[in-house]
Length: 114
Length: 113
Image (cartoon, rainbow over all chains, first blue to last red; front, side):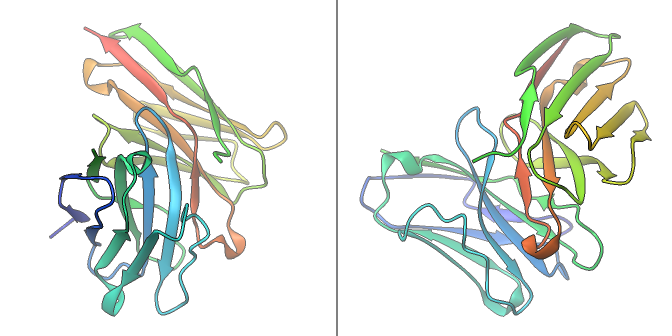
């Protein structure tokens, strides 16, 4: 595909369940970012992958959150034992690397924890 | 925490008028970017201004950057109803941050037909 895709587009889960959110970046983009956006708020950085380097996990809010990027392409964000405050839109973005700093965003996954 | 602070939080104007949104930030930056978001979903990059630039134009968009005041403004001229969206500034601190962007809280622009 031409752009960043994310799945599912919407996810409703019960408190305490685990969820996995998927991001397919633009082919060839070496950098991948996850952000979280609560209702009416700006974006909160979660984690950043660059090539084969160790990810920057400094934005993850708790140890219930983890992410991996397999083969330098697809990424999965996992939230364990979900809480109601985890409800938000989770946005993924990719960047081509090199000198470009523009990020290309996916449509996001709206997570609702009941 | 968010580095950028934007004002106003919400702006409502008539079609054809100009819209100005402001962004302030706290740290030194490599560049500042403006993004647009429709309906709370994916963001679209609008324009990037580097720290050594003071003004940049792209179509109906004009961005200014004042690094001494750590502030930027986005001007949309001759607004259209289709410009209705949320607009976010994002700062890139460069260095070892990996072009990680720090976003402001956003300005909700409504352009009335």
